[in-house]
Length: 77
Image 1 (cartoon, one colour):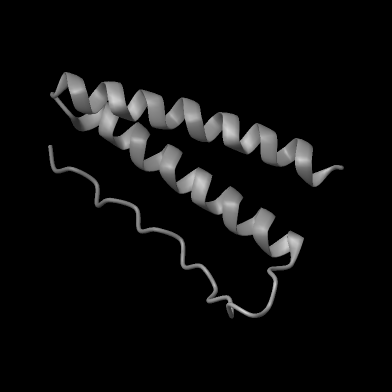
Image 2 (cartoon, helix red, strand yellow):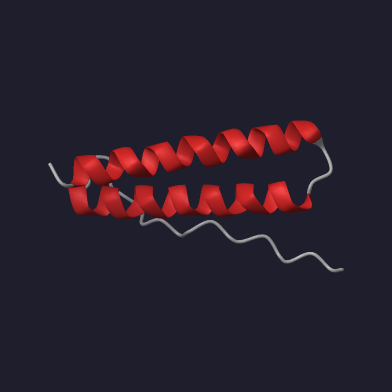
């Protein structure tokens, strides 16, 4: 069975160093990054035969789900 192509990382806007990022932009970028990391880690769980890879993928999924939840709370404050 051919494997699906790996999802590509979301394109993030370039931010000038002397200009602070808008909170809405940060929330959008961070949530897209979390979603990408979760999706690619889920793919690793499905396709890898390596226990260490699967363990790391599980940790990545857990960490990015926690990050997403924290981001949701922070975005409503």
